[in-house]
Image (cartoon, rainbow, N blue to C red; front, side, top):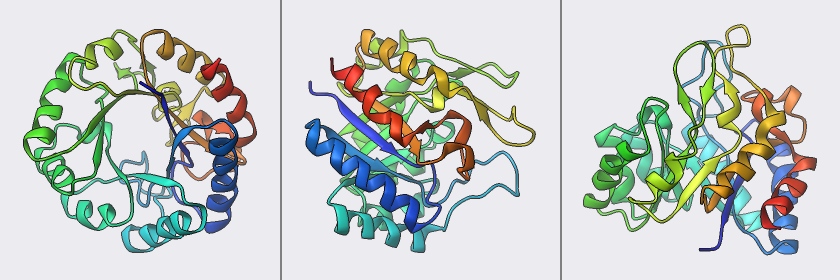
Amino acid sequence: MKPIFIAGPCVIENADVLDVVATELVRLEKELHLDLYFKASFDKANRTSLSSFRGPGLEKGLQMLADVKAKYGLRLLTDIHEAYQAAPAAEVVDVLQIPAFLCRQTDLLVAAARTGKVVNIKKAQFLSGLDMQYPVEKARESGAREVWLTERGNSFGYNNLVVDFRNIPDMKQWTPRVIMDCTHSVQRPGAAGGKTGGNREFVPAMAMAAKAFGANGFFFETHPNPDHALSDGPNMIPLGELEKVIKDLLA
């Protein structure tokens, strides 16, 4: 199965950032012949602090994503956090993503599945790969035409994540498309003074290890200047380094 690549900023900040990232992704898609999806969230409802930047919201955010699709022709992926968001998001994007903490939320899974869009379910930090059988079943029994699963590490507290790469072959029992979230897996949740920290230097190794365990999709949050990103900057890779990481995976 040909690998897919999901890349983009964590959250929609402004049109300028979207344009810079989209322009680079279009170039990579054409030059490297990638199966690529542009990712950005219209609302990050699971931020550490009440004062954290969340994004432009549903209506404005979806319009900005629609503008990216119209201008650049990229396929789109975005998160939904509540069931009512599924239908309007499905009018714009190609893949609806279920955040890890919400992967057991039945109403959210059912609403996403009923849109007919691809549903990407991120494995919760508190579940094993084998546990993901049940979210997949919920989505399929509700009409999902295609379900993906994404590994993003496990949390045991203490501001850290641990990746058990055995989850990748375990999850392949439930769906043939298993994606490695190479950037969220290096997060340090809540470890940066009321916001999430991270170790972006480990992202390339995470990607290569996931490939060795059979991952056939790779998720990278990326930004022109991660140190000034409004969400998840410490775990994102600089946009200028994305090409090398992808080329190494394709080698």
